[in-house]
Image 1 (spheres, rainbow, N blue to C red):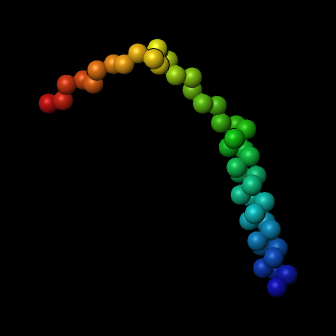
Image 2: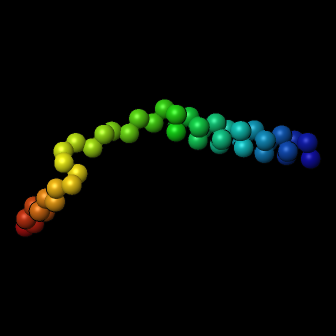
Image 3: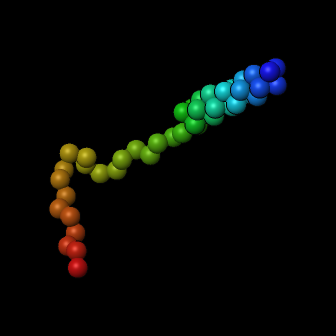
Length: 45
């Protein structure tokens, strides 16, 4: 029983740490161009 609880605790810590890592390290790219302009879609063949 102790082994199972220890494993669950390690997995929970790993998931939480991974989520914090992704949020802290993730650097989203700033959109380029005018986001308020509407561009027509290119013609499809």
